[in-house]
Image (cartoon, rainbow over all chains, first blue to last red; front, side, top):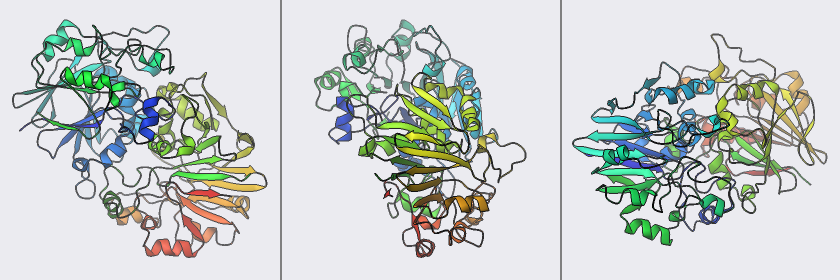
Length: 298
Length: 298
């Protein structure tokens, strides 16, 4: 029994194209010249009939509609048994509002992320008697699905944008931004869609893994500024870049990870263009650029 | 200058197919046998370059992506200038979370609907300095867009599902469920996606209108129960049905409305099947069944 990981959405918040963005990538996606990508979510399964979703993106309805494995069986029996959140960002939680239709499942998150949801009455659309809010402590293993063990761990990051105060620590390590370690039948898979920096403990944790799906938000830290699309660097947004000496490609070079897949790409990232030199470079360094519908079996 | 109304989403909350629904219509939509429909939203314009959206559905990203009129002009200039909400239901407000990308627009709603949003910190993702929350009193005309006058009025309905208490009044008339009267160049258009009953004042208001887009949630009041999909009648959900002596088809029969279009159809509604006898009956009675992408110019 292997771990199946199906990328439902490979893009970061906003998606490709983003509704109000006229950058080169977004316009190319609108013209069908490069593949469009929906927002950040991965479905996982070990038996092929029970599935968990890692992050509930705003695009979840379309993502599920084009994924036959997630279609209901019978009148109202869904293969979706669990949802796990890695932070409280809108691109990772807004899809919960779509999952409101009288359907039971387990909703796993840290206490801090659950508190974000509890602070918003609109999420009570997920009725307490159907959607069980399961609080998971960092480092505490739990069964995400029968036969699929999961452990959450802190990675450097920040609170969601809509909760930012006057000053923002962008490499906070705590319950607000986590990575996921999945384990089944001797296989180790990591899902880390947001990470501000590689630190020794994280490097040690993922060393030798069978699969890592990792934060691919930006190619360069100043990419959005250079495109004229904003004033924020990747670091300010809590994301390390792919390229450069402090980038993820360099950080993973010696970690012996069998399969390395970028997820959570911002619409400006040049790797979203299949013919780009940046994509060729990432691939030459052993990375796969994730895309909607891609399945990786480990 | 006419009023253009583009149906972005013709379905009620959940859409067609609904993620966890295995009813006949949802499965037929998954197989491509009948057209899929996204959730409840209509875009309107008078000049073709400035647009307002009536209700922000969870499917708004996909809806905008397939509507060239709503694509950005230049790097970040959107034709979307205003959003108007007719109630606080998830199918009408969740899309606001998608509209968070540093884009200015006016957000119009009653005080009561604004209060629902204010009670949820997640909507502060719409920054106050960009998204102007404009409170509109019932009966008070305002410019939704330059040259497009709008007036809100109460229609019988209920509070959003996630705010329901132990007892629920389903034909409340107040600020929680409203209809919209649009007026430009002598044309009168009404948008009423949720309405629990036809009352004399509403009948008088819409009489002789050029276009009414009206609540088409269910064909029959007990339709969801009959399909084995729940325990609620249409009345319990705050919606009058299309058929029957108290239904909308009968209620509009003598009102002299030039174009009558059903919107906000639940996935169980047989009129969503192009070949159904119910659709034929509705059409024979002068109604058009709305669908995604349909444009009506008045």
